[in-house]
Length: 110
Ligand code: SF4
Image (cartoon, rainbow, N blue to C red):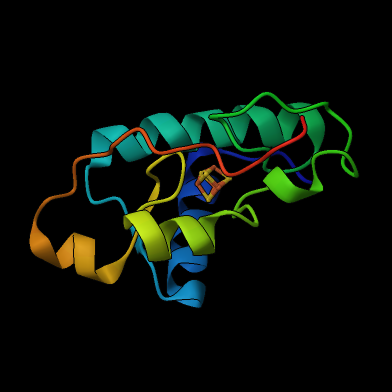
């Protein structure tokens, strides 16, 4: 993977949000913090490991928590946000309440 920058990660975030019908958290400061974590992880591991979780550093073991993780869809459906709060449902974003909450970790057995 070519070296990731904050800008390329931000592009990735916007593309993913568009692709899945979500909204990237409009709080630019918050989003930049997550984007920075994603960038660091991508350059360290070679993939966008979720910055809110502890991975193994092994692509196969971490496959479910490569952003956008497999839990994002169900979490956004149920809570209006992904575990990190990087992605929001359109409904939550439209409500103006974009506060990120601590939601239960859907990932088990790790
Ligand atoms: S919780 Fe999932 S979708 Fe949200 S930032 Fe982490 S890996 Fe990406």
